Each structure stands twice: as structure tokens, then as C-alpha cells.
Length: 139
Image (cartoon, rainbow, N blue to C red):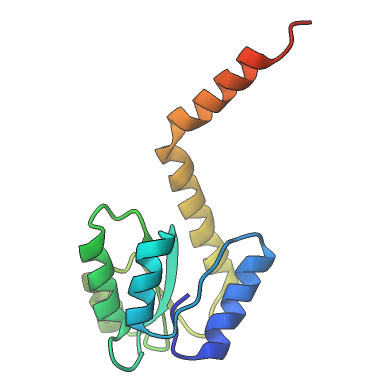
């Protein structure tokens, strides 16, 4: 979660933690870049209107650091006009949510990311099943 409003960032991070998600909070674009390089999240919720490096520039740099698109970027902003949505998309955001935040949309994007991760690792899942079958006692 990236937002210069500490209360907003902490609130969403705590809510996600309650549902079992591991979270990190950054209060600036620079801090977010450092955390993403180390933590390698599957999903980043980010405010657009931050001082210094705004959300658009932060998203561009995240995409440049990892062009695979492995991380899903979600813009969280009070700016909801079509031009704002296009600007976010051009910066590399996958989704654009306006404040106040709709928790149903948050849940939906989390489910999409979880499904995408499961589809990316089918061999790992099959391998685990095979290992379990191989070591299960015969009855």
C-alpha cells in the first residue's frame, strides 16, 4: 500500500492483514520502489497524488524495474475522470479505483491476482500432489 496519507495506508494494510495477506506500507514513491524490489508483491495499491514522485511516475519506474508485469498495480485516487483513467493506464496501472474505496472491488482484484498466480505455477501444484501421492502409505 502506497499513500502519503498514513491513516489511509495503514487502514487498508490492516484490513488486508486481517484477511491473511502479508502487507507492507510506503508513504512515498521512493519508499515504494525500495519495498517492491525487496518484497516482490503480487499486488500494489497506490495513491496517485503524492508529493515528490507521484503515483504515475512510481508506476512507470516499477514497470521499468520489472517489465514482466508480474505485479498488479492498482491506482487509488480521488481523480475519476476518463482522462485520469487513461493517464493511469498509460503509466502502467492495471486498475483505477476512486476514493472512497469500494471493498468489493478490492476483493475482486485480490481474487484475480490469486487466480493468476495459481495459473502461473501449475507444475508446482502438480509436483506437490505427486510427492504427496508418492509418500502416502498404501492401504
